[in-house]
Length: 334
Image 1 (cartoon, rainbow, N blue to C red):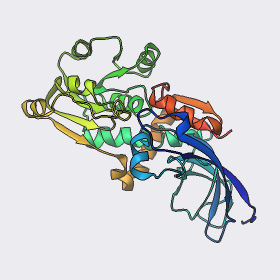
Image 2 (image 1 turned 90 degrees about the horizontal axis):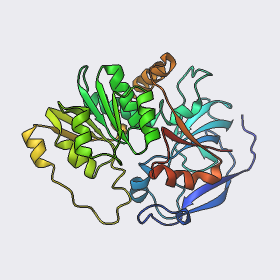
Image 3 (image 1 turned 90 degrees about the vertical axis):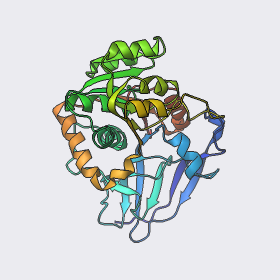
Image 4 (image 1 turned 45 degrees about the vertical axis):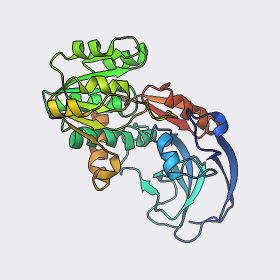
């Protein structure tokens, strides 16, 4: 079906690369007249947008000033001349911070088939999406977490960390998590973490020792910096560290000096491995189906930090980097 109508899209662009913490003045809204849909193309309208920590370092690597901000969205197909994407169906799109886009289908992925009505489609940006897959494969394939082991997660109330802890519990592990407010600590306890603490109000070394005197088998690292220095010294023999993120470092304008990792790695015979989730692209369906099943069974609980309105994308992004969200940060189009 092709209506050949002209559509005006609104988009947030990057005016200048971030220096230190992103500012509202780094973004500019513009309107874009989209071309008519040609044969084999699809017009989609975004309903939910995602802001994620990776956007901060990746913007420098993958974007030029003036480009539309990178990111994922859940969008509805409103016009299509591609049978793989019928009108009314929902897709995951990599079009970035833009309300409408025309695609040849390369950057679109249909949502999981038979998506239940009672499961919000916004979860395709969180629990049943990239953050969920990051937690699932990071824990399974990098940490190799096994029943009876002790798992440490920092940034634990965020989109990835909150799922790492729950999946570790499903696996049969003891889970310790840290977050930056008392409300977030309570949230972690509510979703089943064995121990949770506010890293801002404790002596970190003491808190980690008290939470697990026997040390840690797995450390799922989302933060970097000082936390990492302290945690490495408390790993058990043959422990595994999955380096997923380093949100404490993203806004640094000069590289910080920290401790060296070599001694704990040698003496405890640790394995420390960085990863991005694209490594398991050929297994995404396996991960998504497992995550969906856990959500339906009530084993995976989720919380979304919802900001209403496309106009508020930059402030939602800035707030997420400051840790204002508990769970996944989502922006609705309207």
